[in-house]
Amino acid sequence: LPINQIIAVLKLCPSLQHVYLGGNGMGGAGMKQLCEQVLMHNDTIEKLDVRYNDVGSIGCQALVDVILSSKNNHESSCSRSSSPCNIRYLYLEGNDVGDLGAAALAKALSCFENCQIQELFLGANKIGSVGAKALAASLGNVASSKLEKLYLEGN
Image (tube, rainbow, N blue to C red):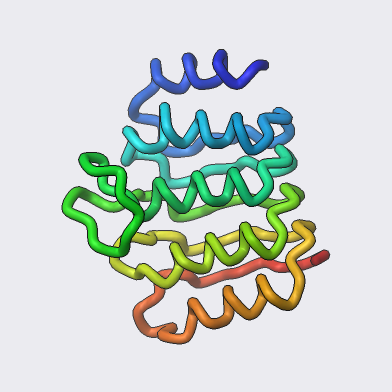
């Protein structure tokens, strides 16, 4: 399905908790649309599966913007006035996020009060040492992090 049709269906189901969109070929631009038109306005989604969609670093940055942004002001920062993004399980395997996408996700993980992610699947994303170091640095204060599992196989 084209991303605009997927978005139209998701808008009709505002109470969804689990969304599985793996292998739809949405790319970075489609992920950005999904974030701006659905995820930014939905705090019920707890599990988001977007495996194998080639979202790249652009799609990762769009997700980070959702995690860090207030629904009211759309500013990316760790302070937030409205309820946090409730995504707890994020499946991003096989999306070519690379070091830039990993660094963007690391920024979200370091904002403990906003980021609810408990399990993050980043396998097969061409994350190198730069991205791995950014992720490691973001988890420096493990006591504050909600992250319980981080999957990095195949990078």
